[in-house]
Length: 66
Image 1 (tube, rainbow, N blue to C red):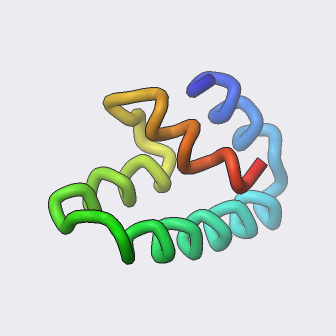
Image 2: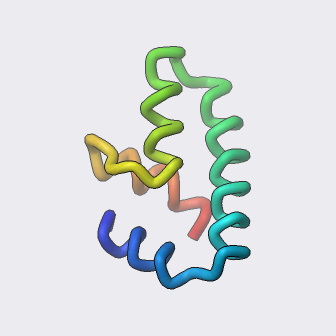
């Protein structure tokens, strides 16, 4: 799943990437409202295309975006 996500981002245009990031930021902002403080940095890192420790977290973040 992770490699597919990165591949799709590499193939996407810059406008598409910016749109994805904007939606991702909005989704994370809404998600963090109900999330403990200790998880905020990890979720933000996952959203910013860094390798997550658990694939389930990545799937949960990007499912609304695809």
